Image 1 (cartoon, rainbow over the protein chains, first blue to last red):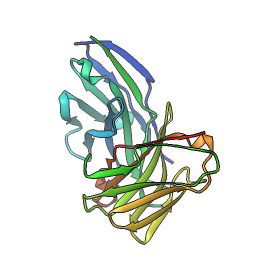
Image 2 (cartoon, each protein chain N blue to C red):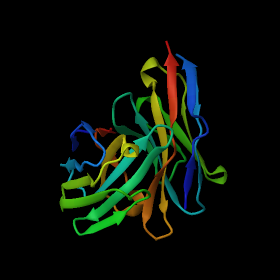
Image 3 (cartoon, helix red, strand yellow):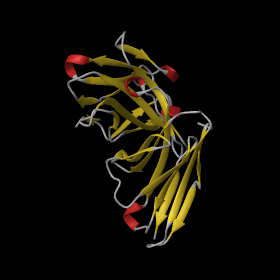
Image 4 (cartoon, each protein chain N blue to C red):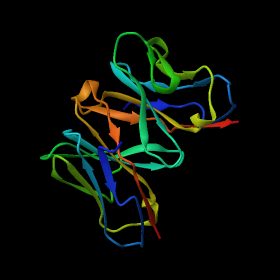
Length: 116
Length: 114
């Protein structure tokens, strides 16, 4: 079964610092990759997704992610964070499961705290 | 996302009680999902439904049941609630089949079982 690892449980940054959140997955076949964001007290919102093509994907609010197939990674980046980026970020992978259907698997999440 | 609604938004219940969480969507999506979120564990899939006649167990279905009353409605039931079912529950929907599927989430139901 596929698994998704997010390396950092909690990241604390000052405003204007650069952000990179790691995400690695274990699956050898074709995958579709997602980053979701959950602001405090809110539901998950889609930040960006990768299906195919250019491995550098741009999402909303200045976020981007790069798919590196050889490293099984899909790291999320932002050049300059703002206090409003304080949230929990989830990486998710959609891949074919053992039963043959596609299944979305989430990482455990990374909390980002941005200090003004 | 206002297209996916969940009721109730918050619920406190006692051990042993039966409780139903409801999800409705106006997106016209065929696929619906129930997840629970626990701190430090991310989201885990409870049940999913690809259409009204298709119900499937997810990773952690024990203690839960579901009903797909219509394309737009997918309910999650806890037949006899227990404290370790205290969690945040999310409903999600998607339309595109399998490979290029994107899931959209409801606002969540926060459940506390005493």
